[in-house]
Image 1 (cartoon, rainbow, N blue to C red):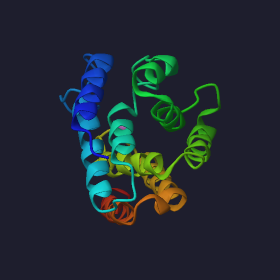
Image 2: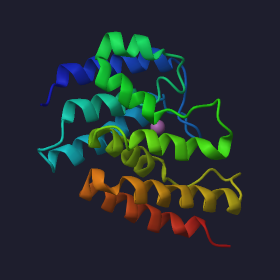
Image 3: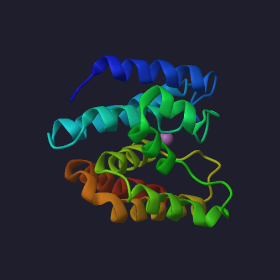
Length: 179
Ligand code: NI
């Protein structure tokens, strides 16, 4: 299903939840990041009619609102339903865990969700593989690339075209990973 009224409701909700938050390293309002992830998700769903576009697009628009905007899972579930809230919860890191365990733990939980949730994680990393902030060390850039490779490896079954896009972004990001 394609339900643009739902996407607009999700975008409004996200805009209110993220408030004055900005995309790191840019002056953009945070919803610009969310819109970019949603555009990637829409493109992937348009290429594969077996995907539930409503779940993928709403999940993309709301994917950071538990982790970064202080929204509760109960609120998300009441407003957008159980499947959406479960998907966003899986996409959120568990900050009670040691930092180096958080990504792996989230990937394990994402893999227990439908493919639409997997593809939001791919779409998020495709969107985030932009030129890194100048203060990032070589070590940090390489770690970010390696993490992207892990995401691709674990979740590539979500969407072939999106997996291919992530592969290309990782390849291009290699330019920031040499001395
Ligand atoms: Ni994100």
